[in-house]
Each structure stands twice: as structure tokens, then as C-alpha cells.
Length: 242
Image (cartoon, rainbow, N blue to C red; front, side, top):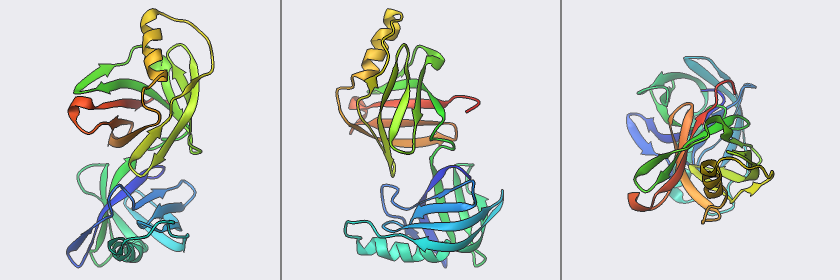
């Protein structure tokens, strides 16, 4: 739970559920320093939070400035409920598995959250496991020599098989925007690796905006496309020890 970002799916008050704003606009991220940051939907916040395996206590909160755009009435109504619920002692109930949880207060009202960003996303090494091309999963050759390191400042570094690269990769809600990277070394390898590397470093779309999900805690996939026929994307797996 700690070290990962969770998006709010809905809140339930008095047995009545209210769906959260779309595109993962409402979220919480629990830090290792007993603080939590998040967004109610339009308004960011920070809070002092103590987390254990089965419960958390939300202390004093500080709200930031609302987003520059107009906040719809439905968002404001949801924000009010989430702001009130995310306070004081809450129990942690895993709804289906470790990817979905309910944060429940003493009255039985709760916040339903789902893992959005994998634990340790930033600063860790993520091996590129496969590419998505249409309805086909294409395995990546090169093993541990093809990896990405995402950074909180919106940059990405890594190795494309033979050569190192740097670029931009911005996570916003459930969208990952990747810009065409720049090769920073000039090494040669086998033709197979070089052909694959060329494809990774010369994406025809620049930038490429992809929806990403996190089916498992140590892997995630990002895909662009309006239908299975034109899907393109990436699948990453965390490198052990990071």
C-alpha cells in the first residue's frame, strides 16, 4: 500500500455509492514518511497519515489550490464526500486482492480504491517484457539489457538493448505520455537487437499518449489505440532488487 498510488473508484455513504470522477482524477499516494498526498477530483491535498497493515489514521490535512479549469458540479459534490470520509481512523479491507481495497470508517461508510501506479515506480529499473502490436503480444529480445527508469520529474532513462537513451515520460492520472527518446551512446550489437532498438527509439507518434493499468503489483502495461486492430503499447516488469 505504501509507496504506490491508488485511484478512487467510488465512495459509499449510508449504503449509497457515488462514482468518482473519470480518468482517475481522484487519487491518494501513501508515502514512507507518514504523509499522504492526493487529489479529491479537482483539489489537491496533503495529510499526515499513519499506515499499518490493517488500518490507517488520517490526521491534519492541507488543501492546495483547485485546478485551473472549471470544476464541474458533480466533481464538487464528490469532493465534499471524499474530503469528509478521508479523515480520522479507517480500517483497510482488501476487497478482491491486494489491488483493490476499501478504506472504511467506524460508521461503515467507505472509500473504494484500486492500485493505479505500481509500488516503486519511480527510480527503479523496469525491464521491457513485450510490445503490443494490434492483438499480438511481441516478446522483447535482449532480456535485462532493455529497461526503462522513470523519474518523478517526467524524465526517463534506460537502455534499448545496445544503447542508452534519455527522454520524457509523464504520468498524469491513468495516462502515460511518452516522447520520442534520444540515443546517448553509439554501440552496435546483433542485427536483431539493432532492429528492435531502432523501433523503440523511432516511434512514429511523438508524443504517444497511452492508457496504463497495473494488473499486478510488479508489472504494468501502457497501450495506445481506439480498437484492438490498431493497439500499440509496452509491457514492463520490475527488475528484482530494485
